[in-house]
Every structure is written in structure tokens, then in C-alpha cells.
Amino acid sequence: MSSQIVLFDAPGPKARRRHAILTGVGIVIAALVVWLVVRKMGEASQLEGYMWSPFVTDPDVWTQYLLPGLWGTLKAAALSVVFAGLFGLVFGMARLSRNRWVKVPAGVIVEFFRSVPVLIMMVFLYFGYFATSDVVSADTAPLASVVVALTLYNGSVIAELVRSGVFGLPKGQSEAGLSIGLTAGQVLRSIQLPQALTAMLPALVGQLVVVLKDSALGYVITYPELLNAAKTLGSAYANTVPAYLVAAVIFIVINYLLTKLAAAVERRLKRRGGGSPAAGLAAETGDPEAGAGLPGSLATRDV
Picture 1 (cartoon, helix red, strand yellow):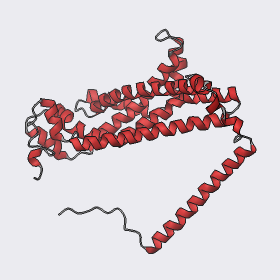
Picture 2: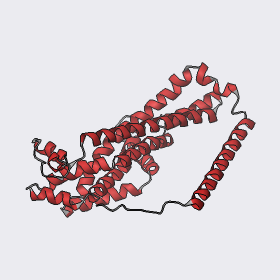
Picture 3: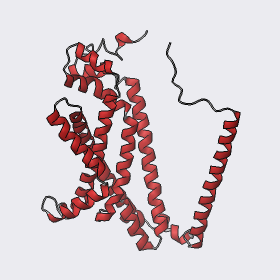
Picture 4: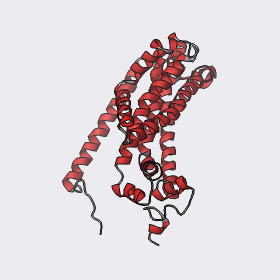
């Protein structure tokens, strides 16, 4: 019989009534803030029809500004996600190594890039390296600076997620793998890492959202992403606030779709047992019966 861990007691009648009152007060305050914002925008003529009509009547608003800016954002985010994932896996596994000559330098690199703000890295990489060297062309320098900065920062965060995810697994997982003759590296790759990646999938998706939003910092180094496009659009059509609001809605929609996609992937992984140690060991050895004695295998499940 398993015991249930209770973090706090269920609220009683007084607590429920207090929560309802606080919720009502919060809703009233939020509605008041929205009303004040709408009122200020109305006083500044930001809600007039001519401010919003270009988004419907003028195709250049989308073809010349918003869509190219969206493509720049998605391109920088996609490249950063791929490279940050590789960086995170490599340095996360390095931090789990038993060799101090591998573990210590990896830890220093990860902690350093986690501590440096992304904007500072972008500015330093652009003005201190890419814009003054012949490594990339002048047109590609802003993109390279954004991608490298996002890769170093978010890759370091992913590396820490990998390390903490593996440490959070029960010790019996590694002991079971070692007892059947696997090396420590094989245990990490085939048993621990698949489970850790599945368990930390929500955190990884949150990091993808951070990558997408942080790509907007590229406007400081003239990278043509969505926020920069909205700023240029607002200057061209004299509707800066509506342009920024439309860009914000686009960001919200993309982040929402990313979250829903991650939830679907997580459900699929759980159904297929992709994060179980038995599945990982079968993938490592090529033998579907290799993980029969490990947790998550058919041999250990109740029929």
C-alpha cells in the first residue's frame, strides 16, 4: 500500500470563501487595468480604424514587414534550438562524467554561459567578432550573433536540465544496468537519459519558448526579426502601438502552438514507452528482449 504525499491540507469552507473573494478582487483589478489601457489608447487615437486598416487592406504590411520578420524569428529560433539541444546533450553528459578532466571544464563552461545575459552575448559577438571578421558575410553577421548567443545560453540551461533529470532518477535504475554487465556510459545512454529526456520534456518546451522570445533581442544588433519588423512597420504607417500588438499576438499564438505540440509529443512518448529503461536498452543493443529484467519492460509489468 503506497502512501500519498500531501503538500497541504484541502481548504475548508472559510478558506474557499477567502479564495473566492481574492479571485474576484483579482479579476476586478485585471479588468480595471485593461479598461485603463484601452482608455489611454483611445485618447491617443490608437483605436481608430485607420490605424488598423493597413493590416487588412494593404498586403505590403504582411509581405514586406511582418512575414519576413516572422521568418527571421523562426529561422533564428530553429537554428538555436537544434544547436542548443546538441550543446545541452553533450555538456550535460560531460557534467555526469566520472572523469574530472571532463566534468570540471564542462561545469565551468555551463555555469559561465548560464550567468551571462543573452543580450550582452549578442552585442559582444556582433561588434566584437562577427561584424569585424571575415568568418561570415556582413548580412549574415547579425543572424550568426543571435544564433550563437542563444545556443550558448539555452544550451547551458538544457545541459543543467539533463544533469538534474538524470540525478532525479531512482538509484536502482543505474544499479540494475550495472548488475547486468553494462558500463556506466551504456547505463547513462540507454537507461537514464531516455527517462530524463521524457521527464524534463515540459521544461524543454519552456526553454523553446524562451528561445523564440529571446530572438527578439536581435533588434539591438539590427537583425531583421519580428519585433524589428513591427518597429519598422509602425514607423512607416504611423501605427506603432497596433504594429507591436499584432506582433505580440503572433508571438502568443506560436508559443501556444509549441506548448500544445509538446503536450502531444509527451503523450505519444508515454503511450509508446519511449522513456522506459527497457526501451532504451533495447535501442542500445538492438535486442528487443535486452531490457526484460528492467523496470518498464513487459516482464515486470502486471498482466
